[in-house]
Image: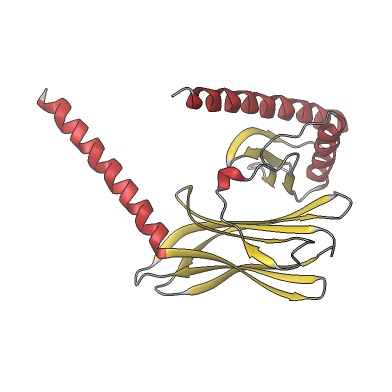
Length: 244
């Protein structure tokens, strides 16, 4: 009985320490999107400020810019990376330039994470009606972008797989309420590369590439099955959470 009590107390202390650490990180780190607009060209800067007097390390960021034209066409640009912040340092993490449609809309989301948890975020939006940028508070889980696929491929087989995968999604009208990321990296011990399919930072499918079209088409079919399975389990989880 005493051993069980000690284990329970240890678990509570660990959980308390973890939650305290997350809360402290949220207070220390500030995400900020900065823009410079010249006519229809917008320069976007993702920045992070360390409000503490201690080193903040093992941080990561993701910035996503979604541009919607007047005709409804959507394009995206995503950048991510790892970084550290020295005491009281204000660092520019990334920059990009985007041409905007005067009658369209641009939305920008910046998330900073520590150990996989969002500790700071910022958003900006530019619409055709207000003609100015506005801060819009938003949670990461509130971003539901249907049919968005981000690719980070580097070889011809990787590009071919991305093209086949995108075409399959358009043909079958597969508009999932989350972002799908296709990453490619060199495979260990061989000439081929490895492709990973990520959803919400979780790898749902992985395979080694081959230049044959039939092989890549088969990989597209398997990737779609894995994503659909993830989507089904995700919906069931949300339904079960609403029951309690």
